[in-house]
Length: 227
Image (cartoon, rainbow, N blue to C red; front, side, top):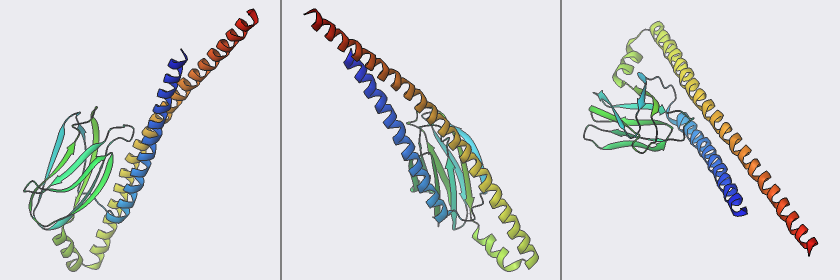
């Protein structure tokens, strides 16, 4: 009987450790993401921002035609409430992998493009155990267009364009940050709920083991008195 109690206690302790490890890993991933964001994503204004469902065991491909040397930047994330993670790959027109993120809930990327053609953005959920909602934002920096704006527009138009870019940047950061906060809040709620249930179960097991020990010791004492 006591071995069963200790087995349950060990399983509960293992679950607690797994939860805490997941929390620590998520916090480290977010810390790394923020560092990458500061390095690569300054003044990030996406051309496209979409959300789509990535089915369990499936791969979703998005294509984008890029017609001049440029830099592409982007970001994606799935719900922080899930324990699942996905893989992300960018392929050039020849099918070569030029960037990848393995086992991430959220990530950012910045890639220099030198060859024009159709580029693929692959989201891999083949090893996942559930469907995932993916939010993906992409910015294709048009170097030629930026060059024309800088040299050919009059000062007033350039100021208006600068204000518009700033407003767009703020709007995107607010929207993206809000979605990440909501996802993080859901994850925190789920984690706290799981910890609460495991704590209750762990407490019940400890109480049951303590009661059984008291009963067992009492029976031994009573037997000695009979002798």
